[in-house]
Amino acid sequence: MHQLWGDCYSTWFQQLEQRGFTCESGHLSLIPLDQQLAYAYFVPPQPQACTVLLHGTGNDALFGWQSWIEALLAAGQAVLTFDLEGHGRSSRSWLERPTFGRSLEALAVKLRELTWSPASISICAYSLGALAAMKAMSEETIQVGRLVILGMPLGLRLDWRFAVTEALSILHPLFWHHLWRYGWHASMPAFGSWRRHLYPIRLRGFASGHYSAAIAELFTRYDAVALAARIDRPVLLLYGTKDRLSSERDQTLLQQTLSQAKLIRVKGCNHFLLAWHPEALRATLAFLEAAEPEPSLR
Image (cartoon, rainbow, N blue to C red; front, side, top):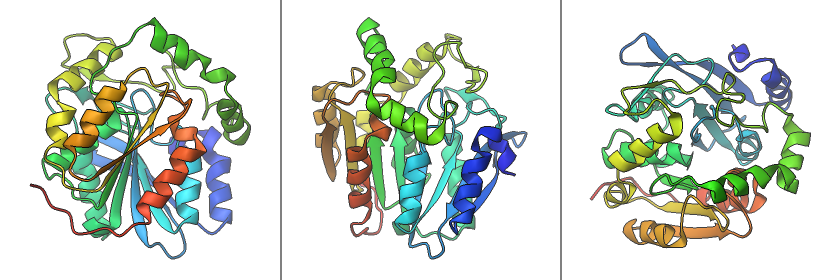
């Protein structure tokens, strides 16, 4: 079943299994039932808790998360990651504005099947995935103990400064370190139509057929600050100081709106490289090790 993710990940799955970790791949069912989301579930010998990873726009369940999966497994955490709706070569689903976040409904079903209690579940979500997580938590679609938000903007404002800052990622040592460890496929994202066949986005029901405009529609329709006002869980906010999608003012507003939030700004980091920065991973592991009270909404 690991062939769901292509040959480029096969060796990595084998290495994890050789280290004693259990790896499971399959599909989560969406309504309508002809739509499916590919998932991967990793389990250490004696798991103490479960962390769910939600990717950002234009990626898939594994892209950018391999070092996190390894670190979480080493810390005794089971890890569940899956394609958001409309994403992934091995998934069959559409990203639609009125039903955005349906993937979290499928996630809730899977977590119940795995018998994880809400207090033992954490979500680490990047950008668009964080918006989906906040929507689901505010609507009580899913209950978890903790939430980590990486680089989520309050709106999508793309300009040449953002494009240049992100393009320069390929010159950063973090990019080359990740490339050396995990290879080209797992390090180089799609840009526009380039490599989009590897990381497809299937859209339906948006005013614009272009994915960046469609994602902007989602951030407009689902107000992250309004969602944050209904979440009463410990939240860690992680942003790079060079992330041009999110201003310090927006980050502070989100922190102040959340009832239990800690904000960490990673110096010199942009939007794309945030998940690969060791400071972001260290902060997340420390945050997840803290006690988790029973979830509630106010």
